[in-house]
Length: 124
Image (cartoon, rainbow, N blue to C red; front, side, top):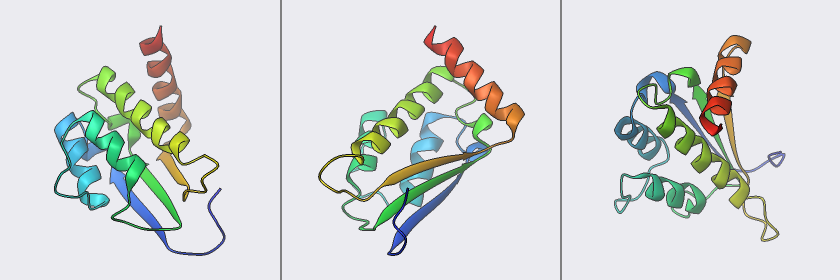
């Protein structure tokens, strides 16, 4: 849950613009104003999402529209992105009082069921 008041960063991303890793890195970098040292790989994305010191706020919300199109060229990379996002959320839930980081996937029930099924199949 986000605090009741303060400065929040809300980044709206469109899954149709993130069909491969390169475009995904670009969209996150552009939306969250990543620093010049961003390394354009999964580890660098994870590091930046857990840091965000260059973009101080009382909370962060990533809104992903059309999530079923996310990394549609690779289910493995989609799984990696979900792991990176999950780790960023978990990193912000700690006793040190860091501002919360949340991710919202906007999809209908059919798309949600498809994404869940793909993730379950991927893990098996």
